[in-house]
Length: 497
Image 1 (cartoon, one colour):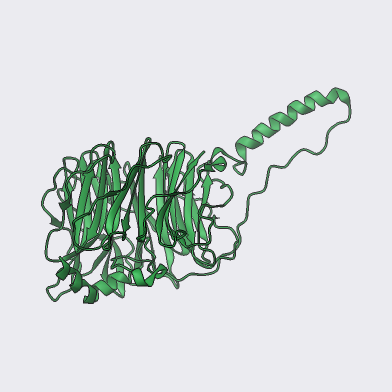
Image 2 (cartoon, one colour):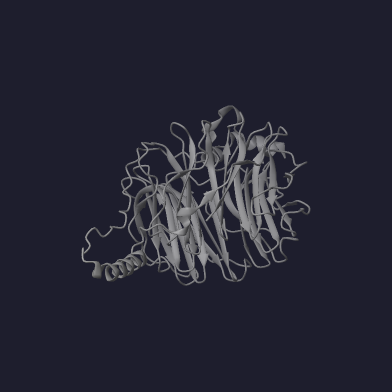
């Protein structure tokens, strides 16, 4: 296992992977003497941030008739007008604006660096997974709350006994099942719990070959669990290709591995599943000629279609996110097909058989998306280094105007926006890595029509970065990495609206 790991350190393709601009939330510049080898890092340039135009408050009546006999009719008129304006004016405060956050919890709370958290939630259960160096080599740590984040159970080391540095943790849930996948020592591993994270079964090595495997992604639909990853060969060709495995029994066992593509260099996969359909998107090509490619399966991953290019680009591309809802598939990415890097969106309304026109959101990168009902929300860092937001209320057919969420705090290093939506609520977090590095939050309670004030969730003198967010019921949960204790720990905050 260590031989594979050493080969990767000098492999030219691995150097390419390390410098690819993709959405992993590890920030290696945070602590150079404690880096671990990762396949995906975020190295975008940072720019200056302009001001935010806030919505105007509701105008009040100033003029009343002095005649006493008109006071009551006028009061009724005033009340009626206020009700009408409240219904029609989205800039009025909504329930999401009243989110109350509790105290910050230190989930890792040990002497080793803990980074790259991922979070999921269902009902009263909250699950957090991260990589942790407290034992020397990085391991995959997991923590669960069964009380909606009010308290957490003991930390579990999911990768104990595996040789190598665990990284690239991903987590998914379905019913009572919790699934975790990660890379370690050149292989991709999987572990599941069938009792809401109270305990986990045995570890499964999904890749289990002599190549280097990393960048795993996971999706779940019913009893089916799908995992895709990048496999790097050492036969002189330095090829990186996509490998795929599926389970049809809730992750109890997996079928044989499938090699999905024949493209020389495949990077940064994303995966989504809905019903019988599985969708995979990735960046492929050479270092100077990258495109975003897409493939689909309509038979629960038994077979896949030929790859199609989403952007037909001959410049650099960076994949953002993919989501599926009903017959709709949504993809966001950034590429350099324009004079500067732009953020783009594309959708399919027929389960990925065809895609509509590309929507250009303008200069930007690090795009992420979420969807609920017929609403599609996209957030990204724009060309002025602001956190930008767009909403569609017709399944991505059209989008409203761009809203700037990050305000005017003279920051020049805003990045890594993350988004979570539920019902009418839209919640966004991002990191400000300039000056006093903090994690910020902003929410809407009216489908993104307007947003409440900006909240500084970390609000300390230390480095806070890599935020992740998830919504469940009336609760919103945020986690990030923070070195307030003197080393990086995993911090957690719960908000209730």
